[in-house]
Length: 164
Image 1: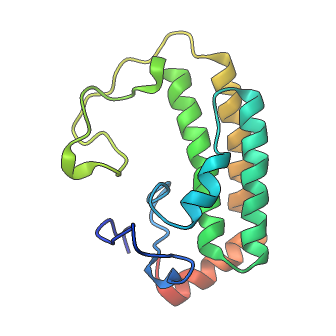
Image 2: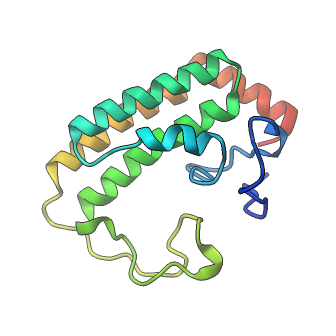
């Protein structure tokens, strides 16, 4: 099932209602699903390699704590923040100022990722080396999270019970 952007994200507590959560694709819902956004976002930093190292380790610690508590939604959200650390650091490495697409996001697409018909801006010819390293740090943690045996087990159980 696709990620449901029609939910009232301001009032739904996904810890109390995991049945409403959808894994979706990639980072879908990462900045919407509470209380996890509020718990994880303050630790999310990618401005340089040092910040990425501290951030990815802290968020991975949350990932493991959620798994230990059998809170798959929290673990998946932590995985999504780690993934987003990688994608955002790469975006800032490749596009000066981090702006990837020309023009504003259409009003009906706000909060959703994608080009939405906008042209991609040219990439820099000299990627920011520190952002490249920050992305690599997050990528290693993201790979570790995706391959974590308990994450895989809980994800399969969640999908069997609630759908993807």
